[in-house]
Structure formats: C-alpha cells, structure tokens
Length: 216
Image (cartoon, rainbow, N blue to C red; front, top):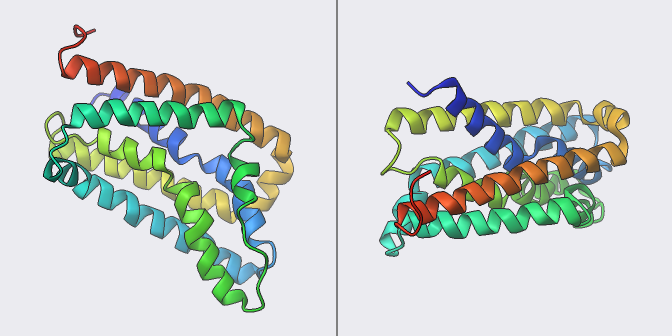
C-alpha cells in the first residue's frame, strides 16, 4: 500500500502538470461565443478526451518506448529536462493563460462545430493533457519500479484531478472573476516553481538509475 507521502507527492506532481487553474482562462476564451449548454458540453468533452489520452500513455507509453529500444531512465532524464523547460515557460513566459488563449480560433457561425473543435484544441490538448502531463504519467507508472496496484493508484489520482478540473471549468467564470488574470498568472508561476523542482528530481533519479550518481 503506497504511503500517504507517495500519494500526496503524485497528486502534487499531476496537479502541477495538468494545471486545472491555468486552464480556466483558456476555457473562458475558447467558449466565449458559445451558449451555456454548449459551454458545459465543451468542458465535459475536453476532460474526457484528456482522460483518454493520458490513460493511453499510462497503458502503452512505456511499451512504445521499449519497442523503440529506449530505456525508461533515458526517457526519465529527457522528460525531466522537458518538464524543466516547460516550468521555465510557466515562470518567465507569458504564462499558460495568455499564451494558449491566443491560440483560440475566431468564433464560427456553427457553434456546435466550434464547440467540438475547441474541446480538442486548445482545451484537451495542449491545455489539460499537456506534454508535461503525458511525460509525467509515463514516469509515474514505470513497470520496472511500480506494481500494477501502484499504477492503478496513479490512474485514480489522475482521474480525481481531472474531475476537479471539470468542476472548475463548469464554475470557470465566477472563479476567474475572483482570481482575475493577475491572480491566475501568480498561481501559474508558483506551480512552475514546484514543477521545476519535480523536473530536477526526475533528472537526478534518472542518473541514479543508470549509475551515474549514487542513490540519495
């Protein structure tokens, strides 16, 4: 049975890389021209698509790597470096909200078609199922280090965070009015700092796995 510390650590890691709060401004910008009913549909569909994508990475991500002849420590080091760069963009860049909201297409006449499109991009990908989230779930479900029970726990934690994401999206407008753009940017940068620490830890553990560094 994983310890409470392990559960909390994985929850924080997945929360940071999925970044439900940082998705709120993207969601509001993407659904602005849509009716309330379609807005709710977009929220549910985006979270469902992100869930399927991340679940596929949990189930087959490591298998694909092994088929390509790539060891997980190498992927862990590469993933940690990518996560670190992603964290730097959260800390020093324009921030997730303004960067991704700029990618939202202009409203189209067919609202239902627009709803289907924005639920996939930019909401499901790359906002919820971000590249960082894809890498994180693979590293947290290493078949060589974690049992199937542990991997199921990781999938359960991911599901809980996605359900929280759905609830936040359904309550997006009042939350954004409370945080405002400045508040959302501050939260995103704090999460970037946490993610940077997680990324460095992943790189160090990858070096330990290949014997470059002693265990710590």
